[in-house]
View (cartoon, rainbow, N blue to C red):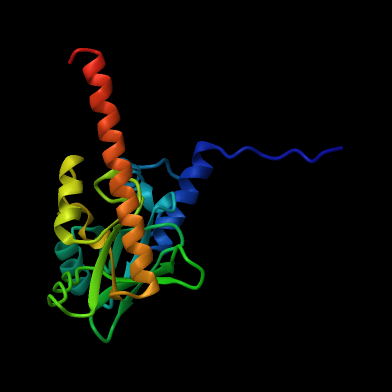
Length: 219
């Protein structure tokens, strides 16, 4: 005879959510024998992304540092805890030596690791005539922008123009953009150039098809 599995009640779900927030340092002691208060329900809604695994909690050494980072980066949290939106498999850490928050996650090629530093300004473009080139990649899921297709750009201005077409504010996704510096003429550089060229050609063909359809319809 199959063993019956007890269904979780609303109270069970409430307790589970609150305990997750307690482990993250966002909620203090709670008497679970009592009904959920409006304040606790509000906390659950506020940190729903954290409970669903779409954000992570990073603990700073003190409340003052955490408050400064939250204000600078536009993030949520309380006390020593900072809540940060994350990509799949992304891990964040507070670096005591620099006072910055960094993240690492697996890249899209075998052995590739993507590293980022939150709040760190964009590097200056390489000098003209040099042997370096910068590429800017928008990840598929971006904070404040809903869903966007993962896309790589060969220049900062080209990326801004693309975002403007979708009414996306650059400041909302600044700390999510991946920046990669490669040597001109290298295999990686040639691969990136080909991908960007193919994307531009595909976009041009889509535009021509739309114009033909509009012409046939008499627009």
